[in-house]
Image 1 (cartoon, rainbow, N blue to C red):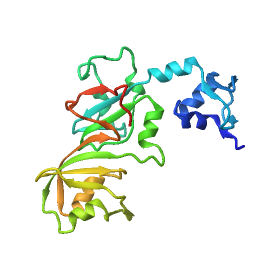
Image 2 (image 1 turned 90 degrees about the vertical axis):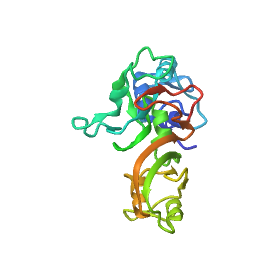
Image 3 (image 1 turned 30 degrees about the horizontal axis):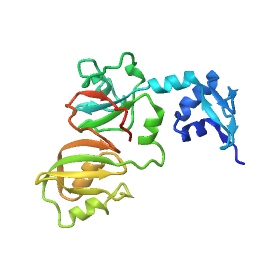
Length: 240
């Protein structure tokens, strides 16, 4: 039977990310059939019992994930934090929206799971959990992201059909989207990919200009009524 890296097996089981698994292996917190494994790159069969010990499980259960309603003017990543304000700077006690403020957590350990343009608002996920990050931005992951987009201009005759399927960006044919009018000025976009400034560039191709773009859902998690600039914890019953 094929031998597979233990870090991959732990990731497939949803117990931790591969990177987290490597740290736990080095700490001696992973067992295979009850025996402690400490060497990185160790492999096992799928039918073997690969587990995290209690210390690793405790660390995993303490990881937090934050839902932030990002305003315009904040960057999701730290690409140019000297010039622009990072969205993570909004994760303060004053901006918390909820009843159960986390007792201890290090903001510096929160990483954005995906990008949201500086000119866009809405749902941004910041997480300490590698499994959640993988479920949103992992390789070969297909997850819906929904946006409300206020536009101006005149939609070309075949524009709506093209927005749903048929546009090309940078020589790449975009995957099928779900686009429809929410009202006279606002479109609803649901995408399963996220190319650079994709929605704005899609709209330009069919005669529309984006005035306001707001992400309202990632997978099964919705922004709902979270106020602009505020953040909350991912609920225990929420999953992407």
